[in-house]
Structure formats: C-alpha cells, structure tokens
Length: 242
Image (tube, rainbow, N blue to C red; front, side, top):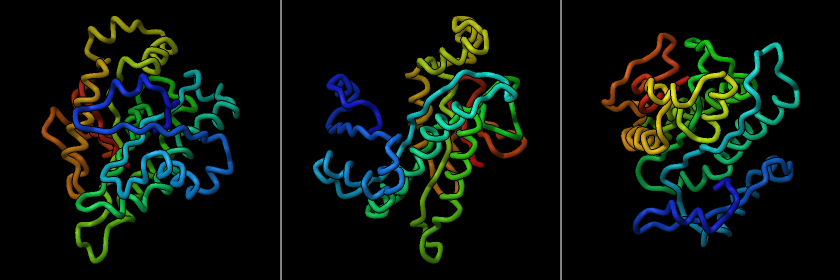
C-alpha cells in the first residue's frame, strides 16, 4: 500500500484476489497530522472497501548502520518518520475499517531483532533500530489497550514480527554495513530467502490470537526478556512482544 503504484505490483497478486496500490507521501505533514486524510486516500483508491481483517505494515527505511555515537539527527528523523510515524498514523487511519470487520482483527508490524533491548545482538543497529523499538512499543500497547468490551474476545490481535534476516535489498545493505558476505550468512543459515521469510510470516499471521500472540509450533524459543520469539535462528520469524 505504501509503495509506488506500478503495474509490476500486479505480479504479486494471488488467485481470486484484487490488488490495489495507494501512493502515500508520509513526509507530507498535512497527511500525518490528519490520519482521516490517509483513510480517505485508501477508500477512494480501493473502490471504497468496507472493512479490513488484517493490516500488515512492512515498509521501512534503513540509514547507515553505524555505532550509536555516530548516529546523526538527520538519520534519526528520517527513520522515525518512516519506521515509526508512518505505520502509527496508518493504523490510526485504518482502525475504523478493522473495527468494521467480523471476527478477529489483526495488526501485524514487521520489525527486526536488532530492536530488542533485553536480547541486544552484537551488531550496530543505528537509527533504524531505535525507530523500530518505538513502533514495537506502540504495537504491543495496541494489544494491551484494545481489548474489546467486557473481555468478549473482540479485541485487537497486535503482534510485532521479525521476518528473519531476509535477502532483500535492505538485508543485503545491512550485511555490507556489518562487513559480512551475503553468501556466507546464507550458507550459515543466518539469512533466509524472501520466500522462506514470507512463509514464516504467514504462519504467524494465521496462528495469531489474543491469547497466543501469534505463537505457532515452528522451532520457537523465547528470549530472556520475553521481547522476541525466535522461529529458528536464521530461518523463519521472530515475534517481538514488547
């Protein structure tokens, strides 16, 4: 939804599905300050859809992976604008459409294990990680705050998922910043293909409930701070609960 509208996007369309693309410029404060305008853009570009069952936010940006001492204010602003403000405003804008859906309402925020505080890894995460930590908190807060009337089970299922270190353009860029060879991390099982990543994410989305927070029987283990569900070390996904 947040990518440039192109005909090439139609190639990702599944059987018996309709794909709409909506261009939204989140650097435009007129939009981010008024989520209702975002909703209007979505509605007018999608034949006025009436509800949303599952909202998945995956768009993100990556600035150079440098030590925290070297992070610039400009990189922080860029990452927070795209990685934190954009998905938060998108959720606020589309929440009425989630409310209109029958059955479970799910919000899935794709994040990264580098945004874990209690299980911080020996890699520099830079402004990217800081902005993801912020959105992780917001996503978890939705799960705790939107619980439905009288505990009737109609609350929101809100889950943060690390889709694995996948071989996307961003994943390859991070490997370069960390000075590791993509071939080596792929062969070592630390990086996964996009198809493997998608399969893992779909498993989590399908299995996510308010009680289970998306836990599925797939080689999982929880890190000490309870913030990250590791779905295999390199293969699969991680669920970040806080």
